[in-house]
Amino acid sequence: MKLYFQRAIKDIRDNVFLTGVTVTTIALSILIAAAFALFFTNTQNVINVWQQDIRMMVYLNPDLSQAARLDTKFRLEAIAGVREAVYISKTHAMKQLKSQMQHHSALLDSLKKNPLPDAFEVSLNVSARNSSDLQSVAESIESLNTVNEVEYGRQWIQRFNGLINLFSLAGYAIGGLFFLATVFIIANTIRLMLYSRRDEIEIMRLVGATDRFIKIPFYLGGMLQGATGTLIGLGVLFFGFLSITAHFQQSVNSNLLELSFFSPTVCLAIFTGGILVGWLGCLVSLTQFMKE
Amino acid sequence: MTESLSNDAIIRMFHVQKRYGVKCALQDISLDIYKNDYLFITGPSGAGKTTLLRLLYLGETGSQGQIVVDGMNLSRMNKKRIPRLRRKFGIIFQDYKLIPAKTVYENVALVLEASGCKQRLVLKKANSVLRAVGMADRMRALPASLSGGEQQRVAVARAMVGDPKIILADEPTGSLDEASSSVIINFLDSLHSRGTTVIIATHDKQLLRKSNARVIQLREGRIWKTHINPDG
Ligand SMILES: Nc1ncnc2c1ncn2[C@@H]1O[C@H](COP(=O)(O)OP(=O)(O)OP(=O)(O)O)[C@@H](O)[C@H]1O
Ligand SMILES: [Mg+2]
Image: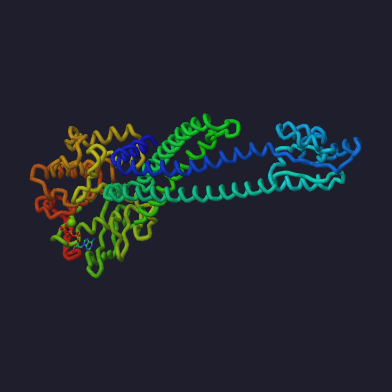
């Protein structure tokens, strides 16, 4: 194995230019695809954070007794997906409204009767936060006979989820395309290398070398190039990411936009993917070349 | 049945024919070559000497007939076994076929590495054959920096380093002066005396006089004459 590695290293040294081109290509492909993935995962994260704030306002029928209110609270909290229901009386709601309107609160003072309904603010469990679950929770709440109306940003959430799905679809498509393109490019550079050395390969065969013996260094070389390219691509992305987040954190409220890089597991997966790309490129060109 | 009759035949050819397009390079060649034979194949240029050697190690496939080498039937052999066939041979090519990008040492060591030898054994054997052919001091040189005779000696070293059963030599003295030729011939003789089967394609008159050797003359792709040189 050590011998194969030495030969692979020597091949790379003898073909610095070709190797450089290949590694750069891999690095660029990884950089672009990974940048997209990073953008995507971060948007997803941000949305998850926002979704944690999803509450429902449950407006009650007017003039309920205290017992009916309490009963409603129990019933609300018994619904699957609901974490907590907090009672907000209409007087409390009016106070809040007044403090929000400040200068115009005199307007409200002129009202003879408080027109606001009593309400519950319902917060949800994490598991119930995607849009179809939200809808079913809302429906079960609406079916309670003490409830007048449920309000939540349903459409907004649905639209956002649709956008996210579109994003991830585009992400997979772009990732797949780059994967293929990279395999293709590696296959071609390896093919160039093979052609430039076909006499040598022919001689090796004549003196009794097996195809395996001839191929292994090329495979190692391809995988090494894949690994190097991926490391460079990820490295560049990481530093780009650092400078962007440093910029962001100054200007934007950092709680709202908590950006994060790939987890070590994902990095490892991308790295493995890069090696796989190198290996596949070799497979394509070598099976073709060795048949001749 | 035929196997038992030819116990000591290491190579058998039955009515072998080789065509290139419409041109017949070899026709109706039937020939037994025995273990530890010293065999010359001669004939004018274009007679088919190189072609005959190439058929033996499957550098070409025959068009008709059968060839058996050391128990391997070449006409119905799996491609995967070609390397194994070729390791039975040590081949000295007419044009040497040294790898230009590899040093003298690497060229020789390659044969052993390809057959899976341990690195220490490779070092030892390659060094010892290079010393034997007098090229030990040029081990790190690239083939292009060597003279024709030196390259020929490296080619001999590479052919013998794997202890092959059969040596094939195509014009081993082709472009050499008399001194260099006799160096090469001495190697081939010493390999033969160690039990190796030696097959040489040549039109070198000097070589062909070797005592006890069998000489096969080709003409236009056919075996024209066969004789054995008298005892020296
Ligand atoms: N690859 C090929 N394609 C077509 N014809 C070939 C090929 N190789 C050899 N021949 C022809 O086959 C014939 C025998 O060639 P071969 O090389 O065996 O001759 P030779 O006896 O070795 O000659 P020399 O003494 O010049 O080396 C020649 O007429 C040659 O032109
Ligand atoms: Mg010839």
